[in-house]
Length: 188
Image 1 (cartoon, rainbow, N blue to C red):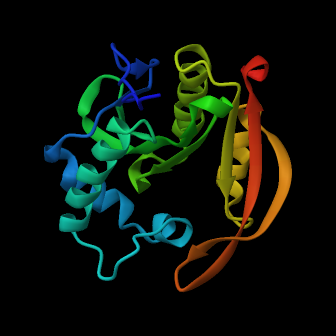
Image 2 (image 1 turned 90 degrees about the horizontal axis):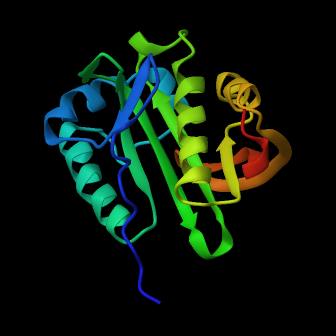
Image 3 (image 1 turned 135 degrees about the horizontal axis):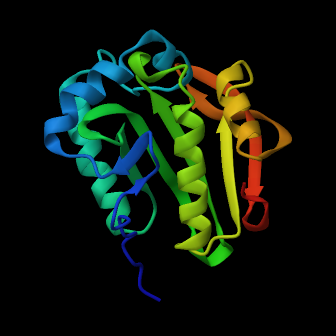
């Protein structure tokens, strides 16, 4: 069985506050500036130091290869009324169509936080994977001390399943992850 590319939604996913569209090369500076924020770096990673715009540009290339292989799809989170203003990023990754599951991730730039935009983004992603990719389970992991992401998951109806001990390599060591899941019939 051949692997199929994951299609970008057409039209882009959106509500009255955010839209999710493909990244463009002209977004590199906004991605870099938003992701370089200390809070993003506390819970996410660049795997390289120092982190540069060249790394963002390489990530864009790698993300497209992953999309074409059907493994992941990455979105720029932008203002619904201004698709040039990047608010953050979101992704569906670890896609296992044969198992009916995938994982979701997101980050917001400092200027986008505190407005409920992560919740809106995650809801858009969840509805899309269940309605268009026909998945049955969406997973979300975050650091145990990332309370904001845990609250986003809970607001979107995800169930906290527990702690996955020493789950990922992270910033020179290992990190536990909180596991949340949402099933297709649980979307709000």
